[in-house]
Length: 252
Image (cartoon, rainbow, N blue to C red; front, side):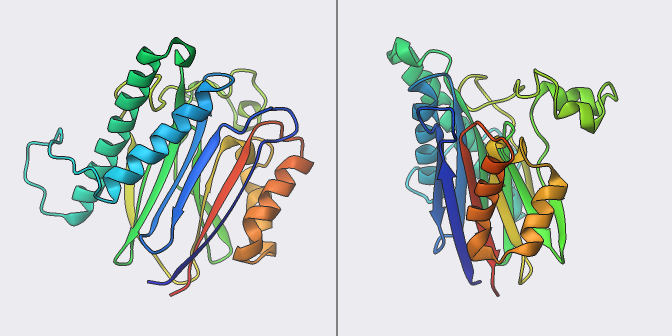
């Protein structure tokens, strides 16, 4: 499978530091994005620990000898998704340990989205409100469900999508790597098709740009331009947070 990937990150017009972090490995098919939280330095540290830990586990540098599953897994996709779950919990444990060792890091945590492409299959995992989208056949599909209080209220019918975008508590997380301890990532597997574009982004993209705007930008620009165009659109549409986009294009 031939993959090309592009990324752009920007601190935004308000924040002094960029607490987003990301990793791209086109040869290995592994793409990670984290949006740190915890103030000043701590969010940046949490995001870096999460990226480094998950990359090391999934690339085999830190082999998970133990998993929570006791049954024998015969489906390779199940094995991959369990590895991703394990890797994210290893990251959560290491972030909490770093916070115990340094009081300045107390309360730090991070979102995390992961995309691993192997043998024509795309394996996804996420914790928090960073997102993964698929743009295929001129249509945009959101592949992740935010781990937020607002998403819970949407699911319960107490909020409309329009109100959900403007309520003051829209970014309160129900799960994060580190701060919330053990996590239950949402995971999925799907086949890739030539022409697919997978977009990994922090909420610096999805807050100022709704899905219709993201779809329009994806339709109007080629993959090599897309990360730049999305970040620029977020900035021009009032984005104030750190902003990061990774574009993964399946060529063949």
